[in-house]
Image (cartoon, rainbow, N blue to C red; front, side, top):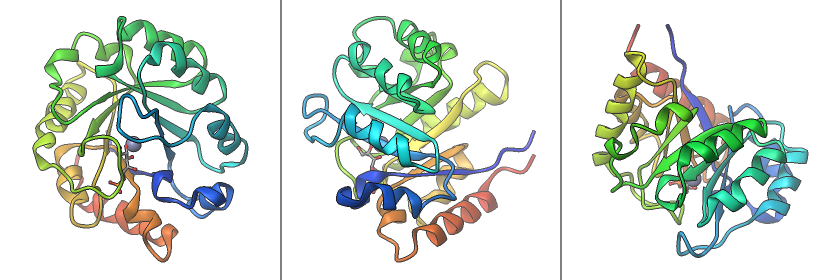
Length: 225
Ligand code: DX5
Ligand code: ZN
């Protein structure tokens, strides 16, 4: 079973006045990561459903919506309905059983993702993870781009990888925060499949070349089958 590293540039570091062009510049990415923040769950405000719908209409790559919002049960299904490939909600924000929300997201045609803040243990959610398709391990405190990578979250990545490789979970392991040329190798070695990168892609002179370089770097560090 060979895995290949996938890259999801984060639009948070793109030019918000030119979102269509910014998605075109990363047409060779695997997913485009869209950070939805509500100024309640995190101390920042970005964009919501109408803007994500507009991005969905023009993006050449599938949307990976990362909802940093309270009350995901109320708001998240709309992102699945508008056509996002993956919709990730924060475990800490769920008020009901996250498995019910996962079912709603999948019924609307999306993959369902569960995100964990750096301080949230994986063990707490082992019983709900079988309902999810992706696990987003936050490697910074959610809220802002350009922060430093927190290597201590890699234990969670290693544990998730082990559970997937031994057949206990079927998940794509995704990491978000501070991923760049200096950090992608340790994340790849720990077992990440999908790497979110905001400033490392959109801060580069050539985002497309940055994606290729990150992907190649991660591939070199992938455990060989
Ligand atoms: C932070 C967001 C990230 C952010 C990552 O809350 O969830 O997706 O865009 O940006 P970088 O890659 O610059 O850390
Ligand atoms: Zn994100």
